[in-house]
Length: 331
Image (cartoon, rainbow, N blue to C red; front, side, top):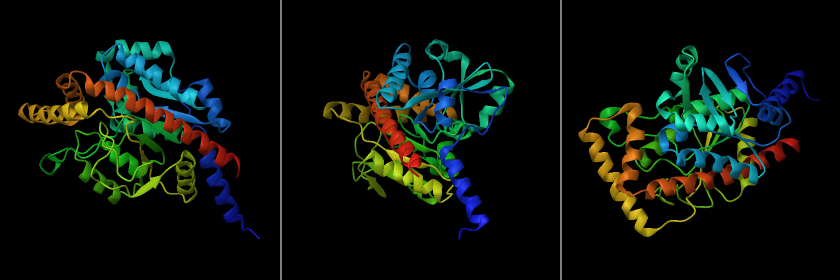
């Protein structure tokens, strides 16, 4: 016979899995289509908005954001791009709002978790990083989030202590992040070590080695390998059922590599890192600087790769979200 305490605990787990917004205020707006999908346990995929305001130039930023949303829809899920407009946190934005963010990058603050309260209080515009998007997705009841690559431990962090808040968020927010791995401009090895310390499962999708953002493989073997979206979904579901409060990182290799581009991008990263060091660029400014400079030095090769990898991540993330919804529904 099941005890009342156990029964209550089972209901708590079910509630967490089926979700629903955990915040409902005047400055937190969930798009009606997204809200209905969350309540009905339909697959929803969160998307960050920093790629629109700080990752690419107009109109590539706009077309990429729309293409990523389309990829999610084509694979059976509902996209929910997250951004802050006029001090209101939006979970799911319109094409017109994407256009606004893409054209008015200079008005948008890059927001990590620490910036959310400030930008809401100031009634400003902001785009969300991986950390902020994870937190907002969790509040909304969204379990899967797709991005290009995550932040991590910067090269030379033993001197600068420059470590992305993305890693801290992964350690404390139960949302699955689907990405092409850790950004190539970072120290991949140290980042993986810190994720291990934080208890964050790192999954490689259909490969034995952790992808390296612009490159399909790094020298680091993945702790976990999953070969199907259903395997990933099963892992996510069991993690939530165990009441683990950490997130998961699913890394997806870029679909195709051009050897010439790989070499060009690798040289460009080394050069951009040297320039950043010479100019004493750090903190929140370093990643946008490096990505922009690598793109310039590689004659656009890195930007083209970035577009393809995030679309591929969106396809896989949507498939995982669909399978997760199916597993939860079957309980």
